[in-house]
Image (tube, rainbow, N blue to C red):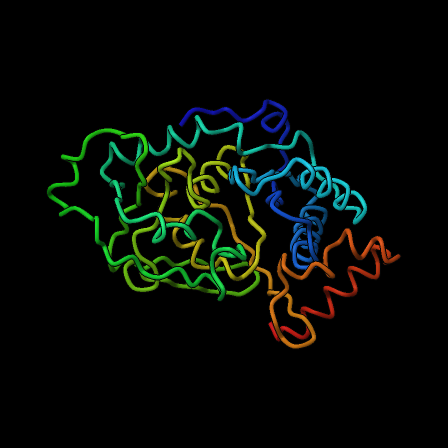
Length: 297
């Protein structure tokens, strides 16, 4: 795969390279703060680097104002990251190259299911517009999956077409999470063929994440436990693309006083709102620590 990573990342890179990857589709909230603070702490403890990736692939919901707000919020929370910031909207060539490789190797096929069927698969599984429960994307019923002997007969990339990754049914994906311990998911049972490219020319969360983590040299991914199944999906993509899997550290999901998961719809818990109410960074850190205790994980 072409190496389009900025030279500054490659020269003198620390052994530990982590990342935070906010989406500029809303204001950062307490749940983001908890995950990003954990990533920051782990990078600091390892005397490594923490990179910032702006996951701005959604053309309808991404806003420049949210990018500015997230940078201000990260600075206010004293989260230190190593520039430059990577923006996914500027890296479409990398994602398309990965898709072409998957097509050539017979790992992907066109999917002609309706827009309504695919709408929520365009976002990361933890997005409010996607899953309502942790990583609850339904197993794809293989409506468009070609017979294995026919898959190599599929034509090359076709514009205005959705593409799915063909999972090896029955394959067990095992990994030891650095926070939650051993995990295992079975392809075709816990998750099915998943979307990797949308017909509007945008890669899915899964594909973009895998390509960027590899290109940025990420050694550990810190993110919420609602993305455990996504780790299994991404491991399949990494294998298919000949990439090394990073380590993973999944954090507990934060909940409110009623046990509901914190999300972007909780405007009162946006960092910007808390700042305006006079909260200090120390108080915010204490808030998400208390929420983590309520989550029971």
